[in-house]
Length: 241
Ligand SMILES: [Zn+2]
Ligand SMILES: [Zn+2]
Image 1 (cartoon, rainbow, N blue to C red):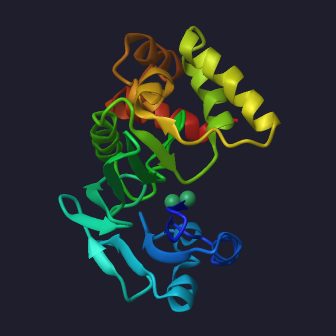
Image 2 (cartoon, rainbow, N blue to C red):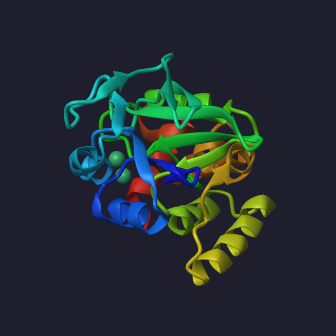
Image 3 (cartoon, helix red, strand yellow):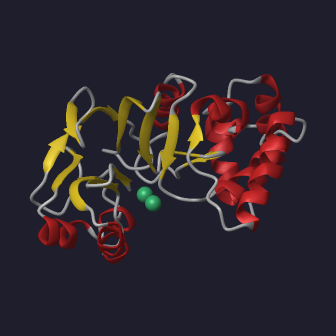
């Protein structure tokens, strides 16, 4: 939730009730619901929240969504909370997945990237190819260093466990892991992350780094049907416990 003390915006409300509780507790009016993709844990609360508050709903042009909503896709801009958001197409996790990017708020850009980029990881490839996901992640990695990465799941610690298996010698990654362990021990979120940090620690943004390529090759000499280090990493993570 993003709010200015009066109006609020939520992203991917899987459940309506926690949002309704927060609106009441803080005395806020829900103005906008942004939706990144069709999965139920991102859309389950949309209809109830829209009916209860009259909020506008903006979601992906190419996916099944609770109607009615305003459908947007890459290259579009939309306005919410008086802020301008650029819509980016980021297929891979789902075929029509979108992200919302706001150039600046309080001096740093904001990125709502759903299940595409997580801190230390990326979404599973349910409907897209490794090449599509890599292109989507490349477009996110090209955003300014200070961009705040507001992803939709707190998966950081388990992602970092895998990242350390890929790059045990990455000092930034080791440090970040210690930092995140301490945050989670206090029940504090690790999010949002930043693009600068993700470029240093996230193996899925580092699939062209020699040490990461070598680790992928050591894990799977055939590099998953020659689809490259990124595809190998994604498959490795799927099987990783
Ligand atoms: Zn999802
Ligand atoms: Zn999800």
